[in-house]
Every structure is written in structure tokens, then in C-alpha cells.
Image (tube, rainbow, N blue to C red):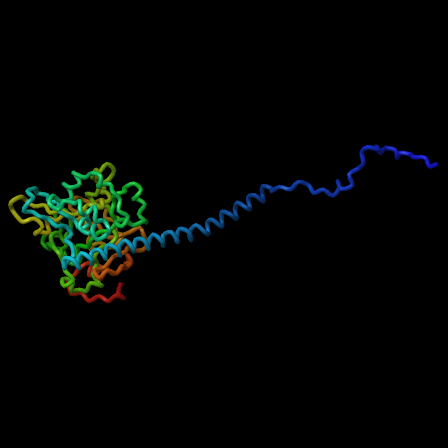
Length: 337
């Protein structure tokens, strides 16, 4: 019989693990590897972020163009009904005994042509926008996206602001002997003026080369800030802000003298270059605020014929001022701007 002997040092109950020597050690990122990964992610974000921002700005620019296109269509629809464009401000001075008359601005008149019939029908044209808003303060801060450029971040703070302004002209001052009126340098050669209802026939320079409405993000001297206070540095213009006609009571017919116009809260001229900054503003510079935008390099305009174009802020000033007038006999080619 064979004898069964145990090997010395080997327990009969515990056998060695033959695969133990093949186990892989626990793996982990080293600090250097982690920093490399973070750096790569940061580089990718830095490369992608400008592309994302550019895509967003392109979308905002397109929306801004669409807004102006809608305003141009509203003007044309109004013209088809009344055979004229609306006035910058229609003022019934026979029923107003004050020295500072606030009438019915363009921005109320065209609401019925931008699918805002209910609001426009509530407006009382007999008392003017200032008195009407006193009776309906709920509309003071009402936001109208079609009056706002999406690239304007101030909308978060000022829900009521408006970025689009009618063009009052800019080629020739209305009062050469009095170059600056009580509210600024005024013009009467543009499409929109107080108590002036222009027709297509009046635009002898050509409707395709005449500004109707453009972007402006420059503050107005008498624009409204927080709590509706007038700031010494000006403020954004509310959607309802129009112009006014001030006059020495009993001495002249209001709106007949451009020297006494107050246009700054509703209209702009092409006197100063696009995206100019004229701060600080004196009281008699309220009508001098330039067109401009938060888009890089220029601003959008809708022309009298309804097309929308982007005008570079490097445009020749003589050409730019000519685009602001309706009948100064300038010959302007569409490839010139």
C-alpha cells in the first residue's frame, strides 16, 4: 500500500491561487492626464463658442430684418388704405391748449396693420398718446417684440423700449439760420414729419433709395430710465414715444415751425454717422441721436419701397444723408451703398 504523505508547508485545506499572479493592478487617471483632458476640453469650447455665438447673432439679425420687413408692410398697407403714409405725429392743435402738444405717433397708428387691432381700436385719437397712457398705465411697460431688435440686451431691464425709428431726413437742415432748435437739429426732408402725410409721389428720389425706418440704440436725452425718470445721460425710448410740437401759446401754429419740433423719442436723422456716440447730450440735442445697432458694422433699414438692407457704418456721409431725404434730387444707385 502506498503511503499518503502531505507535502511539508502545504495546508490540505488552502490551495494556492494560480491566477493571482495574472491580476491587473487597479488603474486611475494621474494628475497630469486629468490636466491634459481639461485643457483639451477648454480648447474645444474656445473653438466652438465663437461659432455658436455667430450662429445666434445670425439668427438675431434675421429676426431684426423680419421685424423691419413687417413694419415696411404695415406702412404699405396703410398707404393702400389712405393713399399716403402716416405722419410722424398727427396733432389736432385746435383742440389742444397746452404749449407742448402730444398727438398720435406713427407707432400707435400702424398697430392695426401689425396684427394689433384690439389695442389700436382701444386708442383714443382725440386725446393723444400722453393722456391716453395716463388712463391706461398698464400699456406703459408693454413689450412689443416687433419694435425691438433681439440683439439689444437692454430689453431685460427695459421691456418697453423700441429700437426702430422713422427717418425725418438729414440732407438739409430745416432752419439753416437756426441750426439747432429747442430740441435739436431738425430736418424736414425725410419721409416722416409731424402733420405731414407723405405719398409715394412725394418720394421723387426713388422709394428704393429712401429710408423709411431704421435701427437706433442710442439713448434719447428725454428717454426714460428706471422708474420712468429722465436721466441726465438720457435713456432708452419707449415703444409709445412720439414727438411733440412746442410753441409760444397764441403766437404760431404748432407743427408749422420745425425749430419747435421735438423728434428725439420717435425719429432720427442721417446727420451723424451710423453708430456715432454723441453723449453727453444737451437739451437741444435730443433730435440729434444717430441711427445704429448692436450688430457689428452697421444697422438695418427698411426703405420706402419695403425692402430691407444693411447699411455699413463706413458709408460715405454724403450718400448716407442723401438716403435720408425724399426729394433732394440725388441720383443714387443701389450698388452704391
